[in-house]
Image (tube, rainbow, N blue to C red; front, side, top):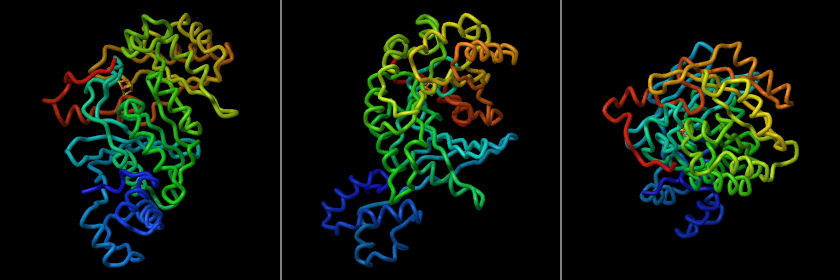
Length: 356
Ligand code: SF4
């Protein structure tokens, strides 16, 4: 059976054409799937009975049941979704200054094994398909109060989105389709730990989508120790690619920097970071480490975080300290997955495919 949520509108058009369906059928189905949130063909009353029966014989409409909703004291909410194969992924809803952002997962686990990251402990279990990414949005929307509206989507949950390149691009195309959910591409952010060829390709293919680069180190040695992907694509190569990306007018690249006490939070690190970012339209988000049992790192004291920020600002780099929204529900970027570890104690940590 074919899950219709795998398809972009163009792909759905091709699928409908192959089946001899009329030309308008794909847009009609897209509206049912994403605007009216149909879960079966039965209720699609503007399709003939025979068309509905024929669709039901060959296609399905996937949906993600929410396994659990965990509210946080700061207003964030974490959703745990059980996939068809029983795996669990998480999304976090983060209200902030008039915005309502959903942090989405793109993989179950992650191959990149960043040393400070909880998801990395799992290794890559599998990629999510486009339907599984888009369904996180639909399921979260179901949980909103009347009058609430998702304003931003960030692919910063479990997984390295650019490692799941083709499915990510398809998910973004589905999310931004005007006869579907109609999200503005500029309200979507994809984050990467530094897959340089995919970063260049993505920026060329979907230039309106925002990009966030996880840096977290200011020398090659330090970054390699924290983020093994640096062996494959060095800091120098990554920053060169960032300099060359075709950014839309007024757009800046976001650099994420996880601050680890006495590892990468020194004044020398801050000064090096200023020098590294010279010539790049950049802003920096500082993320104090969200401590967990699987990484030997601690969160720096507040004064140290503030002085790191002050050095960057003195170097004319816009710098924000990212409030650890949803901290009590493991909501910081790249730090989802704890519940998965707890739910599957025999499966984790496990050796798995690594690309770094
Ligand atoms: S920080 Fe991101 S890229 Fe690195 S292991 Fe975690 S999920 Fe993967």
